[in-house]
Length: 316
Image 1 (cartoon, helix red, strand yellow):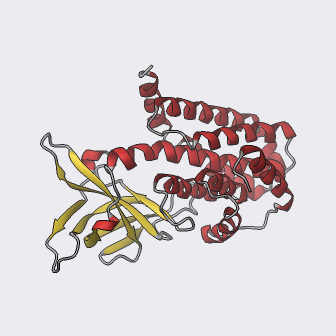
Image 2 (tube, helix red, strand yellow):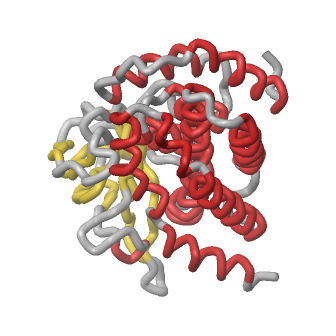
Image 3 (tube, rainbow, N blue to C red):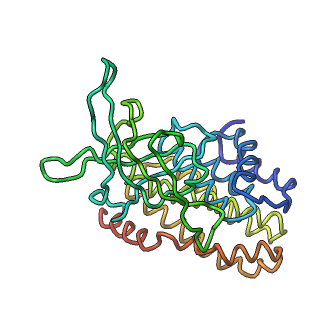
């Protein structure tokens, strides 16, 4: 299939006839279906939308957006792996709050330089199911005292890594969270990703994540519209937002115009959610109950987004 918006939308609409309300009891049940259909389309944004479209609840749509965003950030990640972004620590996720260390140490042979990592990440999404962790660590400070950060890719079975489950959140509880403790974890040079840990990974990921989660959540709303026979104009408006998010996913996440456009799409989605309120009576009690529980997801990061938007406008 060619990668163009009309054919992608046609594919989604064609799939609508096969949708049903068969429960997906766990994230892994949903993911098995996502992996099957996701093979048709390779771009992270497309996979995010498909993942949301196939999800029977908002939690799995969020997961589709999150996993796809990481794929967009680090394209070499295996497509079907569950990856997790490990930044936040006891004092937060700001560069100066990163206390996890990455220190070189003498090698016992003439092989490439080796490193050791120590620290604790306090809030890791999908920590229980994760296959690959992207861990931000400090290699020390520069002459001005700024933390020098690198991004490290580690498999879940790395020696010295311990995952501690956190209590479930009040919304999207199907998505696990955990604490990751790293004790003298051996890191090879090849596991350290190129570039600066903050400017090349942490900073752009917020925008990338928001775009892909918006795309996935929009896919989920389209599913509901098609499955429950909502008025056609709702599907048309949702498809317009979906198509725009898909296009925006390829833009430079550091660019202020990308950030402004994203804010506009998020505003359109919030307005759309208000307009579809009367349609929820057409859904099952279980679907409606989960929606009421999980809709707080759409408010996550809103304050940070407002600050980011003002900063973007200030550049013009």
